Amino acid sequence: MNACTNMVSKKRGLGFYLRIYGKILVQDLKSKMSYRADFIISTIGMVISNLTGFLSFAILFRNFSSINGWTVYEMLFLYGFSLIALTPVQCFFDNNWNLRFMVRSGDFIKYCFRPINIFFYYISEVFDVKGLGQLAFGIGTLVYAWGKLAIPVTPLVIVELLVFLFAASLFMIAIMNFAAATCFWIINSGYFMVVMFRFKDYAKYPASIFNGFFRIIFTFVIPIAFIAYYPSLALLRPENVPLLTWLSPLIGMFFFYLSYKFWMLGARKYDGTGS
Image (cartoon, rainbow, N blue to C red; front, side, top):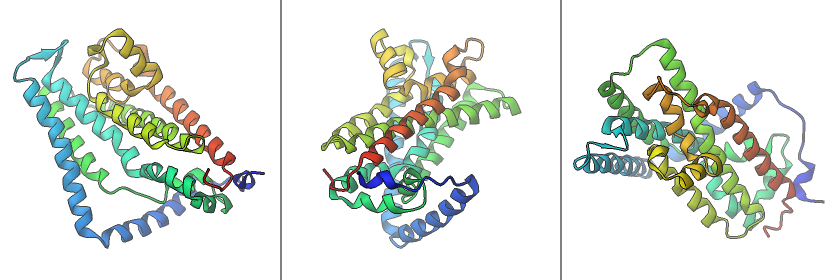
C-alpha cells in the first residue's frame, strides 16, 4: 500500500482552511522578513525583469505603429493584464518548484500523515513575497494603458475585469500544477516545469499574431492564450467578443480542477521512496 493512500479524507470547511492558511502565512512571512536584504534585492530584481518587458514594447513599436492590428497601448494592456493574472501562481503556488526535490528525497512523506488536504498543506507552506512587486508593476502598466485607451470605468467593467483576471490566473496555476505533478512519475521533471513556465512569456502577446498551428496549441493544448488574450478581449474589443472569452471562467475552473486531481493522483501513488 502506498504511503499516501491513508490520507485522512475528513472534509473541512472553507473557514477552517482560511484560518490555517492565515497562521501558516504569518509564520512564513516572519521567516522571510528575517532576511530583509534578500527580500529587497529579489523584489528589485522582479521589478527590473518586468521593466525589461515593458521596454521591449517601446523598442518594438518605435519601428511599427501596430502589430496585426494591435496598437502599443493594447499590447501594454495585455502585458499588464498577464502580469496581474500570473501573480497568484507566483505568490501562492511557488512551492510547486520544490515538489520534485521533496519527492526525490522522500521528505514528501511528512505531508501524508496530517488530517488536512495534502495539496493545501503542501502549497500553503510557501508564499513568494516577490510576486507583490510583479503585481504592483502589472497594475501600473494596466492602469496606464487603460487611460490611454480611454476604456470606460463602470461597475460592470470593473466586475468583468476581476472575473476575467481570476479566470486567467487559474490557467497558469493549472499548467504549473500539471507540470509539477509529473515528478511523481518522471525523475527529471524539472526540465518540463521550466519549459511550461517559459510559455508564460507568450501570454503577453495576442494569439491572433501567431499562425493557425500555434494558435491552436496556445488555445487548446497549452492554453496560455487564456492568460491575457481571450479575457482581455471583453474590455479591449467589446463589440466583437468570441465565445471562448465568455467561457474562460468555466474553462479555467475545469482546467484547474483537472490539474488538482492529477496532482492528487500523483500524491496518492507516492510510496515514500523518492523514486
